[in-house]
Image 1 (cartoon, rainbow, N blue to C red):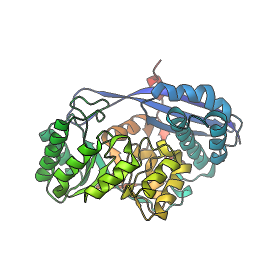
Image 2: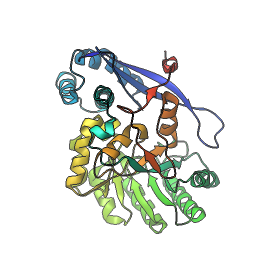
Image 3: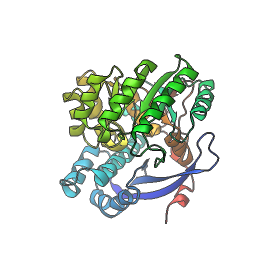
Image 4: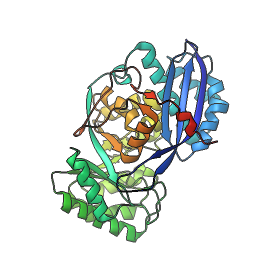
Length: 374
């Protein structure tokens, strides 16, 4: 079997947030790899480099791997590295290589008639879940209202996005001011008081905050019983996170979007920067490097928890490996997956059951390429 063609499209995908009337749209990279035997593997994710990634895959990566064996993802990644990236390992190359690897594992699962989570080791068939719901655009009372809706559905583990400016881009990114940090602390405290102690609460700064801001915020909310503080400092700098970790009792989590390689993830462990590791297959190098990341974390006795969005991909990693943890259902990425595919697994009362169908276990909806940005 050989790779016949690799194509990528940038899709404008509509979805809805609770309480927000206007339809949201995400620009999503959608990748398809087809073998000469007609099997197809797929991958998807929203990235800041939306058009660059699709163009790179179509013009350079796809032609480079044409004719290779799709059941050998290590060989494909090595070829992409030596032919296209050895001086430019981040950004477009890393995102494209990750999506190509995910699509190869989807195709591989279909060829072997097994779901990916079993091919990765099959440690468990169900994973605990949490919901990322706390968007900066919600008011304090709206945060509580949406949280109560989720709790009524059986979801009692919830995460807030914090440390964004008053006018964040993409719902959760922006350069926070000191006033934003004060407001974040007030919002966290308000949610905790209204929801009570039975709800597990996490916070995520999305790599936005400066170290002094992160330390200040952590000290202001330490009594709120937070499960973790995710990506707390600018660029998720391992050295700065180690300093923060020494200043707070809140567990520190990192390793999701933007962690483009194992050599960067390694620094979190050797600097003792984190309590929880969060490799995301859409960034770290797909399932191939996701396995290595999980093994690296296990060697340091560090628990995995998902961060960085796109549960329908990452649930396979967390079900496959022995130190897998909670799967994040971000209100955005969750709905984007539903909009693009039939048969996506859903979280039910704090758990998601992994699919038994081969590969990723779900299939693209008819007509989704009509969403392609021309």
